[in-house]
Image (cartoon, rainbow, N blue to C red; front, top):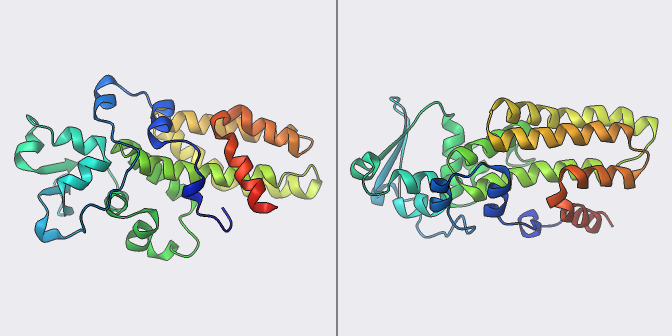
Length: 246
């Protein structure tokens, strides 16, 4: 949001978000990490690392600290639990994942969203990640069970939707412009739906319903009501945006 640290404005917890949008099994519930997703416990000193994350049988790998990744990720917490082969070998292999997205998640666990962008996607450090890439980051956060990362990505998607809603006007010009402003979010919905994950499909469905109702909205009050129907837990985002624009 303009002039504000958006992370400070997020009204809900990352764990609450994951419970709402993901089908959380009892096993996943048991290993879900705390909302404090980055404790800045250790600098990323490769020499002192005690775990290796690798991509399948490729040569891509990262030497990391178990203390960091098990604090931030339920996936790694489960993989390194006693009795698992990864717990004995200290090597966690990931398959069918994007190398850059995994690296982004690792930098996020050691630092934050912005440093991860600078390290992995430096071409986007000024304007931020495009929405399609944000959607992909949200999915890798879901896959690796990193509530903080997943929710940070989701929050940026919601903030973008809120900007459209709070700018709403029932003029021909705005409705024509709305079509182009919706395009990045339609791509977000496509990526999330094609993931075939509970979280991705639910968020994609809500985006589609919102845009369908915006076509029929006659004023900003109707537009905001549509947002609150389909993102009912995120109504405080509207309040934050009003404060920022006033």
